[in-house]
Length: 476
Image (cartoon, rainbow, N blue to C red):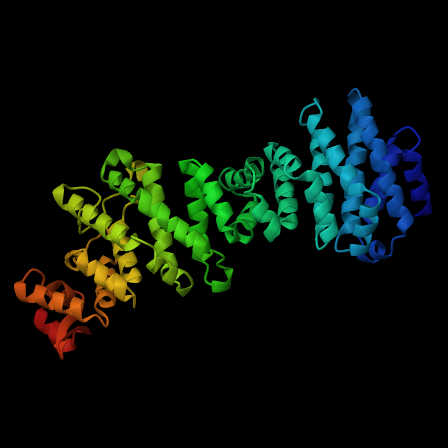
């Protein structure tokens, strides 16, 4: 290794040669071995760190051709060696940090981004390896993370994420993910230029879905900050909002509750977004509006609210959300009437036929009415104020009127029964109302019987009971 050190020292003073590159490659390979890496002498790392500034000086002087190419290859190899040296090795991280390698690397990355030679393979290779080195030196090292953040945020992160190279973007997102913590995530929404970093990550979730780091940043950091979610949502266009909502919905669908990081304040914000825009969904009754992104956002918001109100963590805050139940009942009324007024996606059907042209898939409004009823049922679950409110809004008869089997709304009958059960539970006034509806023949229990249930009076209360086997046979 001493011969390699002398060669490295030569690079700092002499003319660059291919022999220098081969010597650096030998060092890089040796540092892959864990035993060597943990026992490497400090002088080796110090010598490596001295090469990088020399190369930095040469970038501006190189006029192109073989000399410039060799300089870039040497830079990439230095970064590879330093990257390997830092892998799960806090000692080496600290040595290289003390030599100023983080600031030097960021300076070189800045110069590389300004080179006019185009995005050559050598240039991209040097960029990629430099970013990987920053990622490895930051892992588990608070001081290194702080140095990178202080010297690279937001300008360097933005510049690298704008480069049209998937590996550069992926490695940059890896560094960003490593450096982010609760305070830095909150910092993202304090200034417009900081928010641009978060918005760029969200854009990459849509345009570069193969980069896993973007999804990890969003789910493990962004979702923890209600303020950041609100700030991004306000600046996003309709397509970007849909991407964000899809990611939130996917996160809510995780089986393990501890992986769901959506705080109550975010659920309340999304509920307010639904309330302010829910009427947009009515445009889906027109075939020409099937791709209306504002309407599609309402569909996704409803899906999210259904999931959130199925979880005790967010249920109470949404049950107490002002006017959320009223907005949902009003929208159900509009959708129900619209479906009866003319044949459209909101009309009850008995076979699935609402597919988009050319096999594009199921119409986005399929199940929309069923999900409105599901949300109503969730909001009324053991919540007396909401149970009373739906009665005052004339929503009970509306839900009963939606009990018919509808192939445009799979499971609507089951959700209607569930909602009625939650509306009636321990609420005498609501039970009396349904009892009165039966007697007036405004609504009877035939639709409930079709689903295997019957309405039973007991001590002045109305109860839902499953039909007995002989009762089912008698109906046939």
